[in-house]
Image 1: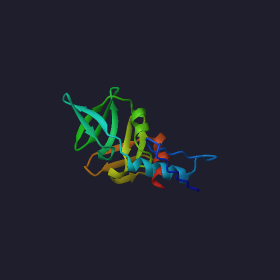
Image 2: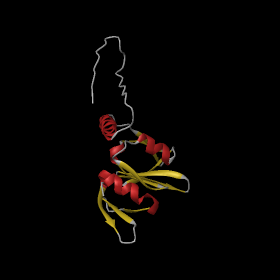
Image 3: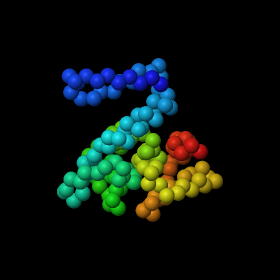
Image 4: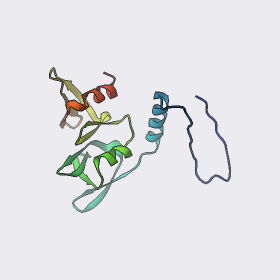
Length: 146
């Protein structure tokens, strides 16, 4: 990989441009590192109050009757966005979709039970559990390097 840095006093804001023939694992890793450096706060709602959440605090995000909730700080907060929109805002590598209705933070996982039936039971650091849809098992295994 080649890297060029141009210092320009007239530049108001730093800009990164990557030119490549295709997306590679090296570029994905670079994107992941850049995302880690600049966390975006999420506006979450609980009991009429707005709480700002750092994506690193999120254990999981899930839908209930069409509404999106995140579990963070030991509590559930509502979001005003769709699950796919949330996934776009979260940095890849740390979060993975485990079903049509749930996204998890891999850094908050305590253990994973790979049963003989092909399902995956995920236990988080706080003791809560989630189950992966069979459709998403290959993607989860790929994210974990299994």
